[in-house]
Image 1 (cartoon, rainbow, N blue to C red):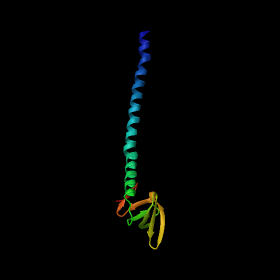
Image 2: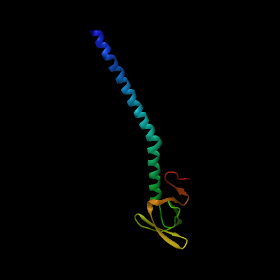
Image 3: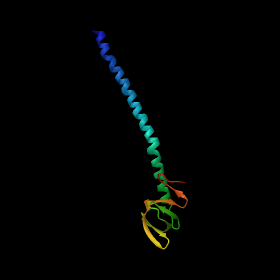
Image 4: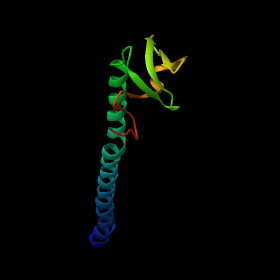
Length: 109
């Protein structure tokens, strides 16, 4: 009888070891996901926020839509941009480049 009890308990030990290994693998995948995807996104977002906080009148900018111009006026979340002879109001978050500095995912420089 004791021999059959040991035989029944053996798979339980193997399955708990398998479960532990599975949890370690899931944790490793989570860490890889964080360092390859989430952390760079957070850093790019922070860099973009810093770029927009430092925005001032007279800065040359480029928007997401490709509009080039100089900052004429800044309000809380709106920026008036002078491009050629026209003035355009754009959302501050849509500015991707100020002068020679770019921010955001896929930004060059």
